[in-house]
Length: 222
Image (tube, helix red, strand yellow):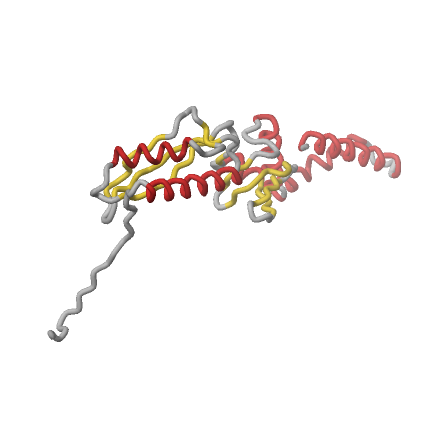
């Protein structure tokens, strides 16, 4: 962890100072610290980013906005936190790559923690025909979802009219899962969409797809 690494570095630095005073007796602790004080300004400017990341790592350790094992999204990167180092945090992406994110970026910018809570709401959209009954489609969809494993019953799934599209009435199906990690989310969406497609087809409810009419101006008549 960050704290243990800082303690180790502090002990190493103290040992190095003691060794210098033993090897070079002319160097006194006062002169040594005086030299460090003069050079500290230069070092501070040179290693400002390092110190900023170091402080951010300490704050992340104590405030715990996320922990090792959590699944987070930072800018364009998303995955599982595998380690929090002194300078950066290591994230393993879902396609098994490693992303090194500076701690200052994680502490000062927005981070989405997908596994912060025990449940997570997901949603999918499905279109039905304008001639079909919304109430009937809602009943069919909710019945199909209730039979699926891994779908949380409380809060209960809901089906809402999202919009009136050009070719269909768009319904938004909301449901909850637990645990809320990436693999379970993808699998749950797959199961829900498959069950909805099967159930609506069996109930005779149309799921229209976009169609286009092309007319050619100046064509010959027969």
